[in-house]
Length: 247
Image 1 (cartoon, rainbow, N blue to C red):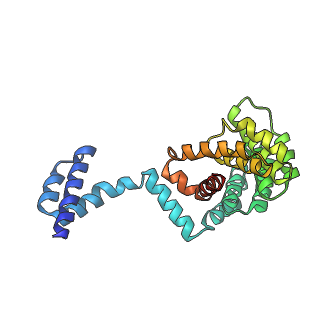
Image 2 (cartoon, one colour):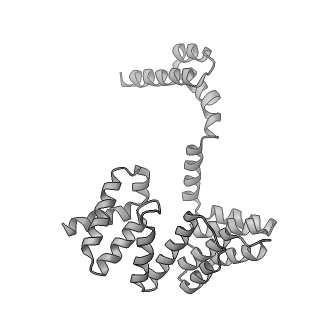
Image 3 (cartoon, rainbow, N blue to C red):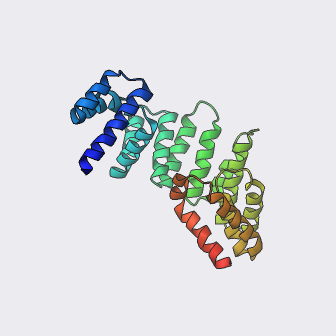
């Protein structure tokens, strides 16, 4: 009984798919009168080829491959550098190393990309600053930020300010970090800045200010996509726990 219901449901889904995607209606006869064979043939001939171009399927395939073989991207980037030692290939290798949290190694690659680049590239400079920060080289990160070319992009300016704030926070300068965070908190997407600022305010004794920020994050969580909540689960769990302790 259950098998028949499942089979019928799959038939209906396939037939709906035929109409929605404008496939040849001859498939309907095959699906209706040869259910298993017809659905299997429809999936192989009509559905499967399109999955290769579906971004969600591609992303899932990439994540699965990276999970099964974490160094896959690093090896591929290394091979590309061996074949052609260009700034672009060095950047790709650096990005792959950053993803593996090998920040010092990534910094070396970004420095080499900068040397190979035919012109001053702000994107390379920012990568150097971020890799230096992650590697614990805070002074080098600040030097890299200070060396970046001028820009009128508010998004890029905020990205630089965020990194300055993180450096100040890690370097034991909480008031400087608070100043930076307060300036950009309303412009940077996501809740990282609010959470970092709230944690610093708690440490500095401003629980009222911290509570207001965390309550704002709590409200924003209701409109945050589930995929983001899952990706930032540790941060949002901290928000929930901290608010519970404050009440």
